[in-house]
Image 1 (cartoon, rainbow, N blue to C red):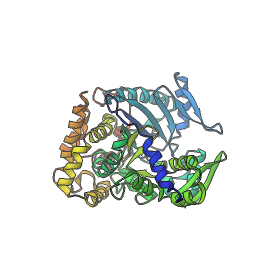
Image 2: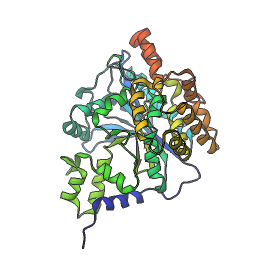
Image 3: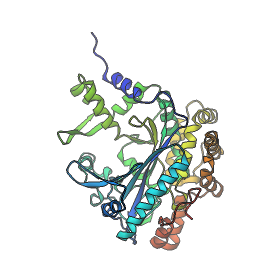
Image 4: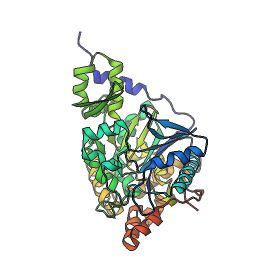
Length: 437
């Protein structure tokens, strides 16, 4: 009897984890990361926030197995340090719509800002530490982060300064491949419209999206846009399994692996499907494509947006939700505008916008405006008035100025003081359209 292919087995299990049908509305969640700094712009240690956060009540402490306090958790929010100890992550939702998401973000950020004020710290609406450089000094002392640093080396430290705004959107089993393909293809336009990390290490950088520029050091295609379209679950799983496994949990610690998952599966776990699938889920979490399916939530996680400016904190979530809702129309448009294989043109565009933002030449004339309209129509079809959250996106298209370009101009005119004034999230509540009052 011919032995089964472990990749086919994983693909079957992987697909089965996604919901068969959507509920009344496609729900949305968010992993919102924010740099935390001292008033002079130096990265601060977010562990200083845990005690004042917990004193506010309604939260429970979160500890590592070794007792390290790493965050706090409430009913619909979790706070924790990211890979960098100067970045706080707010995991929010899921919610039914953008209004609920904004309300949840308001509540969560209000807590963080009050805690930060007690410590003399500032929270920024920005995608990277503006002054502190990537370093082991900024690495959060969680055991698996330390293990990854030992395995990956210096590129891992690029994660110690970045702050993403990752959006999760409900998808069904039948939508997984279209969502992965479509949202990876759209990563360039998302970066063009949402880049916000142009000043870093205390100077104006060569990238408008410093996040995406630096994190490419984690590996070609392992971070960022996938190399081509996936035709089946099996081709998706085989692609993910072709990457090196850095470390895996073992006996309360972490084991260095240093072989591809395909090699690992063949040598060690072929005869234990349950352990093999568990190991795969750990491994694929550390392949950072611009859009990736998440089996734990039955969502597509869309990753290339920087954290947005204080006055426009809902912009990227609105854009991404609208694009997911309109993927069928968008894919037809791109095939017509760019031909049956739009991947090469969109990959070139993605590379260009990381450096040049909205001034990069679009693969098709008017493409960004057309995509914004698709997103607006996608939100409008939900019937909840969410399309008004796209106002900042249309403002950026009209002016031709992305948040990153505005930040760079502020820095050149007024230095770090002016940059921090522009980026600091104040204690005032967020207004009705995602703008601070």
